[in-house]
Structure formats: C-alpha cells, structure tokens
Amino acid sequence: MDRSMVNGFVYVATGEKYLKEAELSAKSLRNCSPGAKICLITDEVYESSAFDEIRLIPFDEITEQSWKANLVYKVLGIINTPFEHTIFVDTDMYFVHPVDDLFKLLDHFDILACLDYYDQSKINYNNSNMPHYTPYNTGMLVYRQNNEVSRFLKSWKECYEKNLDIYWSDQPAFMEALITHNIKMYILHSSFNFRFLFNVGFLENEKVRIIHGRATEDELKIIAERVNATLDQRVWVASLRKCFTWESNLRDRILRKIYQMIPAPIKKFYRRIR
Image (cartoon, rainbow, N blue to C red; front, side):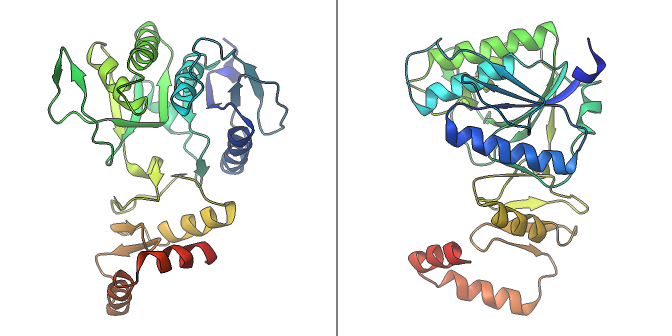
C-alpha cells in the first residue's frame, strides 16, 4: 500500500448541506494538521480543494429516503475507506487541536470510540435487553483495516438495515454487532468528541481536540476558547456555554443562579444574539 494512504481521515456526506458542512470541518482539520490525508465519500460529483480524494459510492442499496437511510450510507462509507488506518468523523465536527497521535493506538487496538453519555437506547440480543449496555457515539471512530473489523462493519450495516423501524440511529446496531465479533476496543475521553450541547466533565490537563455539534464557525471558535481556557478539572455547562472549575469564584456561582431563574425563551433569544 502507498505509505501516504496508510493513515487518513474520512467524511461521508450526501446532499449539499452536509457536503458544505464536511468542507468546513475538513478545513478546520487542515488548520490543525496540514499534512493530513482527507477523503470525502459521497454519492454525487463534488469538487473541493479541502479534500485529497473524493470517492463516489452509489447510494442505491436502500430505497428509504430519510435521515435513517442516510445513516446507512454513513456506515457504507465507513466500510469503503481508502486508508489502512482511518479516523472517521461526522460532518458537524470542528477540529481544535491535532488528533494524529490516535493512529498510534491502532498498533494495539482495532477500534477507538467515545461513550455516548446521553443515548440510553436498549440493546436487544437473543430477544432480551442487555443490561447496562448503552451505545458508544459513532460520530467519531478510529479503526484499522483487518478481516475481523471488515466483518464487524458489514454486520453493523446489516443490523441497522434490518432494524430501521426499531433503532432511532445507527448506534444501537453498532452495539448489537459488537457482541458477536472479537473486536479489541479502547474508549477515548470526551475531549475527542466534545458535544457542547450537553454538560460534560473533563479531567485535569484534558484538552478538547474536537468539538461535535452544529454552530457557526465564529460560535465554534468561542466555544473552543472557553472550554480550553483552563486545563484544570472542569465541567462544561451547556446552558451557559461556559466551563466551571472546582474553584469557581462566588461571582460565577451567583450569575449561574440568576441565569437558572431566567425563562427558557429569553435564554434562547440571548444565545441567538450572542
């Protein structure tokens, strides 16, 4: 294999909205890692200098034209990576710091992912629910090419297609497929998949590297600045779009109490104009 194609990043997108979103994300990745190899997998002709390769994969395997069908296409794209070692990211990812060192972990693990603290979907296996077995977030996956991973990814796709009426997203299907495959996984910290619309805690010296969620580029830059303003042990409070450390001063605590008393419509208006 061409050494330049060993490590790379993959986006999967269909439709103008998500293609533009992938392009913005890829530019943020390029700012952090100028030498990154980036591939876009899509079902339509698209030109952009943000990507090193644009790979066309037909979107004709399923007929349901819905966001669930698009998630099946996402898994199809993940399967068709051109790289030996891949970092797949959703189109609504914004890179703040390099993540290239994750590729080294693939010398020891098959797949890396982050927990999804807010997806409490029940995973059904052999006609019974798996207790305490909740999904990983598949918006960011690091994986290597080998026979077992290839079989697992195909099982993931098949499981989701079979359960489109049951599973709200591809994540429960990922977990169901994982049960039956001998995959060596490592779970990454939330700093590699920071979902700013939710409350998130960070360890000391933990720097957020990827922001996950839809916002304007200016808003994402502000969020990045705030969440990494200190590397002390801290908690991101989504409603305030601000981090609090265990040493938060009295003024911050008072402002937080005041904010909690503000009606939701006013909060929404304030966030929009900020």
